[in-house]
Image 1 (cartoon, helix red, strand yellow):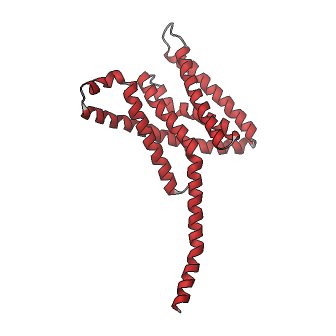
Image 2 (cartoon, helix red, strand yellow):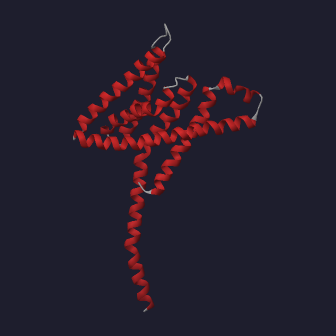
Image 3 (cartoon, helix red, strand yellow):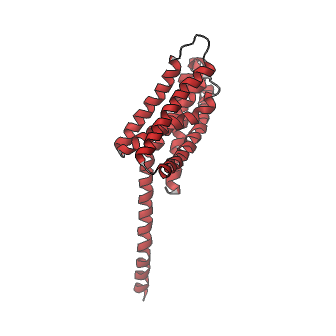
Length: 225
């Protein structure tokens, strides 16, 4: 990817995270921010949106770091197992283990006496569904072989990026962070081929321009002579 397209990729993902967090933040913490709207406190609404967007920017960067880390992990896995089918089997196994740990460990560490495990299962199912939808569109727009890798990234890497907030188990923060992470991760894995294609086109144009430059220079000298 060229520097120009990488910057476009970076900032588009960054702003997506900020906007998603800014919008969903008001909805998730509506009981806290509702007075700003009932009293039409424009200054408080704007400052709160900026703060929420800043949170979104932060986790957008976390998402992008996780994405590029996964690109390395994916290539490393292919090199180690030397078989896409075997590497996919390993990714499926890891995905199942991580989802199980998300439910079991959170329930063991944070559930109160007599509390149902269903909310913990529901959160894992939500992430799995988001991963399945993203993986479906990834496979549809590229190749069926990318389905497992996309699912692995959307589930495993999203949960790993979510760990700092999971450790606090603060419900409002759990949902405040998960939405920008899912949105940014899905956006990155779906639009990466577009930016790679644009980068290839840019390199082709530059190469063509370099090939034509000596011809134009030669013509100019000939005309002067």
